[in-house]
Image (cartoon, rainbow, N blue to C red; front, side, top):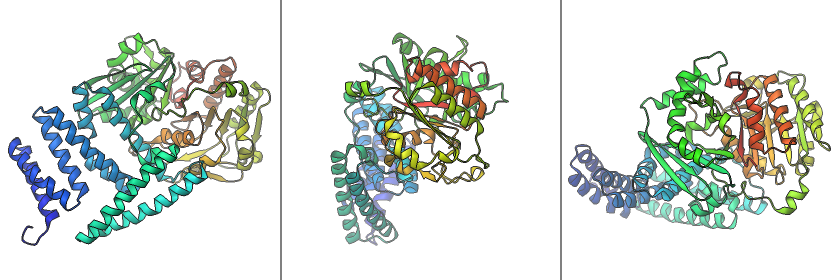
Length: 551
């Protein structure tokens, strides 16, 4: 490689020799080779290679118990990785992260060093990265027209960068490498500038998360936030309130992934009676038991959960405490946060509080004579709108997108008892295109959610929707969908993790709205509605989850 002047190849080989010594336990020798590779990778502008070598050095320092050096190198590596990821296409982003994700190592070292705030920031940087991927995948729009134009221009520039990177990969030249680095710098700079000018698109650029104090201050009083994060062979459970942050780390069984996958099937199968013993109870012991005493001591009015990866499909309220012989939902109202959204958790202004009389805009069964027919949805909508004076219902052929756009901004509660297909392929059984909501006049692409006029929406309920249930998918699920609507202005979204029996949905929904009418918070109203059906298999009562502001 040296004789043909392949400097990138030389740097890669030096790094790989370092890896071999590292695996053999000859750490000093490994470090010598890594330290030869690193400056070379920098001089040829190989950013991806630089990130890999920095990650290797960080991992090595972790192994020989030099935590400060480990943190420094791992942080440098991850900053490059997240920066590079910004510009990649969706399919490459996922693969790139699998190969280059040192975040579990870094979070691990930070927790060992009791740097909990920093660990939490890195965890959320990666949680947001997953959601940003999803938002980009469906090419979601933003409300602000100027921001949208700027964003579209940035995307074009980014595609140009992606094409140049591909050329560089196919045939290396120093000139092209220089061109790529220059455009890269420009694209990153623009991303930073756009994020500052238009906060609503900041998540799309995965910029550094806001200061942790700002995040904590947005948590409502009486709410405890729990965020379990699966690391390499352990789980870190962050517990967060307005005033404090703590983290508990425990080893997890090697078959944890299998246990989770199996339970996600059990909870969706009303015929499976072994779910408590073989799934629900062991998962409670892993995900809740380690922080149970701490949660109890804080006596929360609401338990808010932030999840990532496959945990996004898990209805935590179904986890069963075998000591107390009760489900988690019996102890606390449970809601979910896509990340701690300072926007959806902002306290409402006094003016808004006065104006917001409880009224519902409800749409039901938009295609009444079709395989998509939902007779229970019409009944559901009639019952709900009768509870609140001045509400409006649109059924069958009147449940049009046009009516929705016209009236949505006038109602704090918006209820859609219609089919939705939120997955990566079309829903053939329902004859629905992917990532769409069904109205009588059209299939609405949820990428355009920002144009629905949801700025005053306190709660958007998506009832009767089919959502991504493939447990092998990359794991955005309904949280990804809620994230899209939250970005579009809705303070909270209630939706189903899987499609449920028409009748069960109807009674849960009516009970929920009756509880709201009595003055309960959204979180408590849903908890009480679920407890009414607690004797049944969780298949019936657990799929509906509340995401966003539970007040």
